[in-house]
Length: 226
Image (cartoon, rainbow, N blue to C red; front, side, top):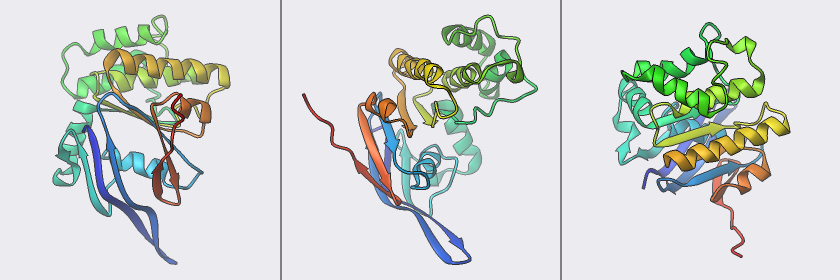
């Protein structure tokens, strides 16, 4: 089991009392699976993704990544685990404006101490169709091109797990479909486990499993077996 949660909960204290964002969640995801998390805005999808990636801390319960319990790690250790095993694609791209496409993709590998960071970055950008845009800055790229840079950055170092939060949410449908194809293609080529939050029913249907979040509760959506 590559990803596992046990009675995972998240709550925050507000002026009106305690807000339960996630009810106790038990979840297991195998290596190489593609999983979509769907549900209404505010249902807790992005919170769950952040907890699974170690970007946020649970109120109670456990997250295990590759048999490592995240609650046993300090922030520095969690950062190292993310660098070694996890890629993350954000809806808003989160590219660094002062860095070129090549430099944005190289950065995680450089921070992780990979000696061939530039070669990896060049190959990935070529794979996502941006081999001629290496020296362009984010403000010189379209939204779809920026998202492809973000995908290349997420795949550098060949992570075991790729988390994607609304990866096509800011893209037009044509560009969105190209980005979707790219995600699944790279998932298959690298054997990377893909876990994504999406409002796009068509994108969710392409995944092997669909999980629905409703008011902080997670259930598996039954799939038709033809």
